[in-house]
Length: 390
Image (spheres, rainbow, N blue to C red):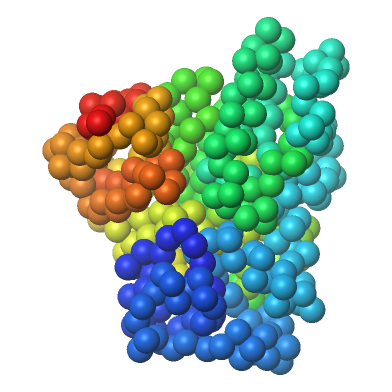
């Protein structure tokens, strides 16, 4: 079963629904995004009846905006509780206390940030909304004298995103302060099957431009990454799944792996893969793995076979967030044609209305290993070279 919601659904996901005749719930939000009446639409009441009869029915959503629908319509099921455990970062840390007993974190209300005492905090630390999305309000604080400036940035970011997402997706009324995790960051798309086994559908290296960078600009996957980490990642995910009793449950996971190869979770996003149909779709363009079919048909990728032809290739999703410093009202247009000429092999370009959301779009690319110059350049870019101001 598929639950579609704002802000975006890809043609690839829609075509997957159509090809497989997957049930899609006929909510007003879904109808506003998907105009194809030939799909296997079911009413909201029919969806609820299905869950009453079969509480473990697999359900996938493209967006965390749909959490509100789940809470309102499937309150009798275990889904709202499981979603909340992961969506609320404080509850998530509490779930993992036994596994990571020495990990520091604390919750604080947004209204109390002005009076935050830094005396007992270990630097560096990360501060972010306890319920968040898209790195909004996420900051690394390395020393005491940085705090006033970062606090001001948080206030500006909170004001800027007001009304863009429902509280189930971003709730800035409460923040979490937690210790900074050293190491390389990775994102994982996976699901837990009917037996509770973790099935990995992709592993991506989340690359940063500097130690202070907390943005979502570049995620890359490759044969080397998959082969190096998949066994370790599966073991880690199964610990999480057992702790939260997950079955028939898709998630998008962010972790760090330190110099001693220890995995420390950053966050887990429930009921979906990467937001805006990014990493879930990239698995197809990179490995011809249809992540949505894998979940709903309970299929496990044969990574040994899949990776045979993927030597020396790297596949990336580039998030074209507006970090230019230009306000949307001052921008005439974004030069997508120029953008495409700066990449070795663009695969898919998805444009986004930057007047509605603070991003210009998403670009999927393929690179030969060792030719990452274009990725490094876009990672460090403020995108001004593509922006025409009024």
